[in-house]
Amino acid sequence: YLTQWGFSDLSDHSISGVFTVYNTAGTAIKTVSNVSVPAGMVKFYSSVPSDLNLPNNTAGNVMFAYVGPPGVIQADATIINSTATVIAPVKFEPRNPQ
View (cartoon, rainbow, N blue to C red):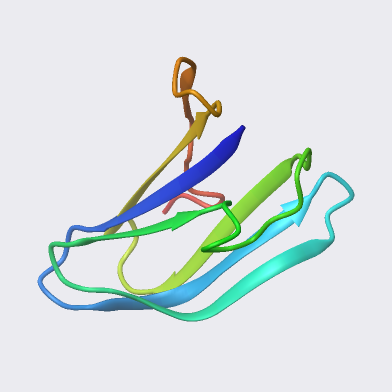
């Protein structure tokens, strides 16, 4: 299975932040600094080797910390098997909703 994440910027200006992937022990296994999501656009990341290159068979969670008003980034995630016959949306919600 691969996982892909999408971050939609609902504002009228670019939002910057840091995207971090953690394993189940809470250890950061990948950090993408200086993520920029253009106004009104979506930024995507994927676990595949050509993008984040995450280890196979790894479980955990992710965090996208950004500078901007609460709720301006709407995020989602999808888990997909190798033949795309199983596509599972994943709930992605604020850690500290304000």
